Image (cartoon, rainbow, N blue to C red; front, top):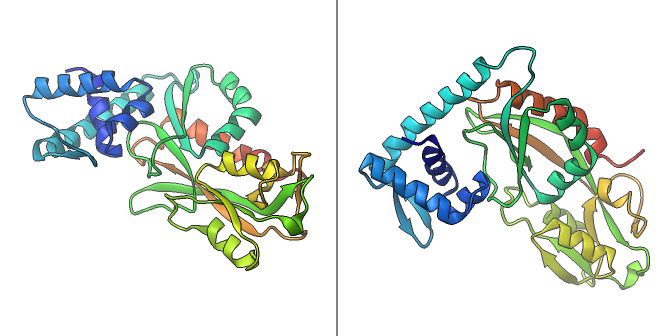
Length: 284
């Protein structure tokens, strides 16, 4: 039985989608489909019921995935055990998060981290549904998602947000550019904007991508709440108001308890904790 085929089944069981599973594993959808079919042929059972809404485990699939999770955990433990103490972290770590958080890490602090750990394979994923981390050495950076029972999570810090506009736009003539996080458990950006927006100020644009919101504000479409770490370094943006930030968002780091003690996950957690101030706080 091919371990790569098992990894496809595990990813589908966690994401409920063949497309998302393929994206997360870094393979194309047709390859993921072939690997799932090969696994089902090897086992002689159907693991998933396919529908327009996604993939659901059959009874046989639930039994198979439970065993596969145990195999996955043992593989992770084996990888860590055979790595000598002086060789540093080895293997794959997947880092999930919002596109702008991953992009900022990549731009500011990723190169020295990977240079320090040449045998570490860091794979970033920014286009999967928000979920808690399960299984194969993965970490997730999510705002306002606290740990559930049995999960591992730490609060990295608080990311300040404030209202900004284009340098070339007049604030008294601007509507709002709004960020809508459709996966958010706590829509704090929407709530904060509703609290500070005047009745005569229309919402001109709503987007689910923080990058689109940022560019729209930058180009004069309207004003809006954006992370201060991004805006304060952009000469095209001017803050409206002063003093304390309008919003502080808790950024949590999630890991699976079965893999959190592996060397590569521990090294990545330490890097993220040490990098938080440089990456997510505005320059002093």
